[in-house]
Structure formats: C-alpha cells, structure tokens
Length: 351
Image (cartoon, rainbow, N blue to C red; front, side, top):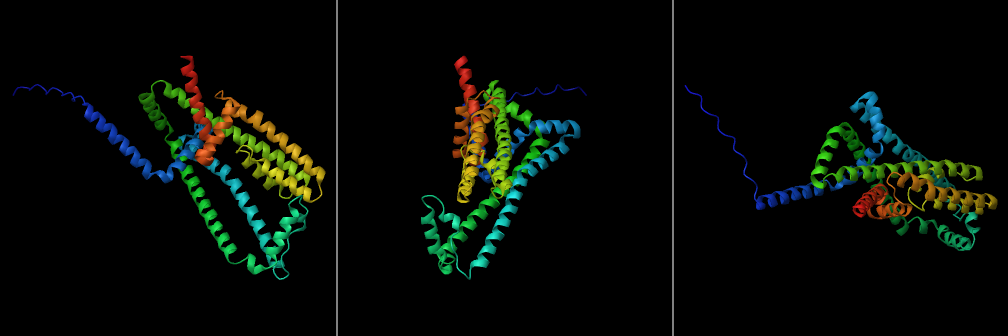
C-alpha cells in the first residue's frame, strides 16, 4: 500500500458583488426584525446600559474583592435599593394622604363640602376658585357622579397602567444589568472588535467619550439632586412646611429636569403665604432660588461637562433635547450623543 497525497485545501471562492450585497441586505433585514421583535424591551435595554456604565467603577471594585458573579449580584441589588427606596417612601406617603382625604370625605359628606379658607385668601384668584369649588362641592351627587366619576376612573386606569409599565421596565432593566456585569469581559471584547471593524480606530475613542458623558450625567444629576433634596428639605422643615422630607425628595427628583425643581419650593412658599407666614415664604423663595441657581449654573455643568469638555449650553441642550426626544431616558442619552458629536467635530476641525 502506498500513501496517497492529501487533497489540497480548496480556497473559498471570492464573493461577487451580488453575493456581498445580498449578505448585507439579509443582515440588515435580520437586525430590523430583531428590533421589531424586541421593541417592547428596548427601553429596558437602554436603561440597563446607562445603569451599567454609571456603576461600572463600583462593579470593578466589587469584582476585585468577591468575584464577577457575586459582584454583579451585589451591584444590581444596590441599584434596585437606590431606585426603589424613594418610590416606596413616596407610595407610603401617598397612601397616608389618601387615608386623610377619605377621612375628610366621610366626616363632611353629611354636612356638605366647602372650600378650605386658605384657598379664598389666595391673591387675585383665591375668591374665584373658592366660589367655583363651593358651587360644585355643595351638591355631592353633582361632584361625585356622572362625568366626574368616569373621568377619575379613566385617569386612575391610565396612571395605573403607566405605573405597571414603568415597574416592569425597571425589573427587566435590573435583570439585564446583572447579565451585562456577569458577561462584561465577553461583551467588551465583542463591542471593541465590532467597533474597530465598522468605524476603525476612532471607535474606541468615541465609546470612551460616550461612557464618560453618561457617567458624568449620572453623577451630576444624582449628586446635585441629593444636595438639593437635603438643603431644601431642611429649609422646608425650618419654615414650617408640612411633610418636609417628602417635599425634599420631590425637589431632588425634579432637579434632574432643568427648571422643574422651583415648582416645589414656589408652591411651598405660596402655601406659607396663605398661612400669613410672609417672612418664611420670602426666605424660602430666596434660599431655593439661590440653591437652584448654583446647582444649575455651576455644580451640574462642572460634573457633567467636565469629563468631556462640554460647555454649559451644550449640556443644557443635550438634557432638554434628550428629554423631549426620548423621555426620562434622554437625560442621559442627550449629553452622550452631543459629547460624541462635538468630539467628532473637534477632531475634524483639528485635522
């Protein structure tokens, strides 16, 4: 028997232009179908990406001490506690307020309802509002039946549905965050390879800029929100406003949206005016305006724009444009997109 020579390895034939075009079209079609199929979960995926980028340094520190899987679980639980704790506090406070409203209704339904005296003491519009409320509150059947009841039921159904959707999105986002952390090494390697193939060497640089913008935005919104919540919560307590902790929490949450947090302390100051506490109302207005001015014009631009050298006007436009286009998620996506765009602009200008 004689040894036969091995068959030569056949090189694959090069693709024709038609085959290459067909492959590109098939790939784009698969991507489009996948996006359509996962459209419901895209917000959860986007939130998970933002949360993973924001807490990445914390995950690295935890992984150094406890391993990848345990660190992923620990950071995910920490995110859940930080996000859910304010919601639980707000729900408890709302339940207490609702019980108070029900108690007020039971006590006054036999005697007839009247608008509170402080509404009539409001400047300019107080008398008109009080008169309108008294005209509608005197007849219980008119106010608590018919169109009003149907409208309240419809509003309750819409709010309940939105709350269920938001909670479901949050739960899926937390689940995705855990798997992102656990498979972080593989994901980063794949993202780096795909970025190099599609965009070349600038891909790594643009990715770092986007991550820094997201992390800076989270730090700016979170730290500024906590500072405003503490400072104005103390101010509410000193001025005698009821539920200062809840109002402080609401101020901190609304501080993420530009020009939204003043609504809370302006409303609290208006309530103080109805209680004839003019000095406290003016002091709260001045103090709240000073805190918000420093936060919006100095602290937040430094925290958000410092890592990517974004001017304040671009930070503001990124936040406002992102909120208008993507909702709450746009708070983080807007500055990240503008940071990448401005980085590209600077590189083109320098070259």
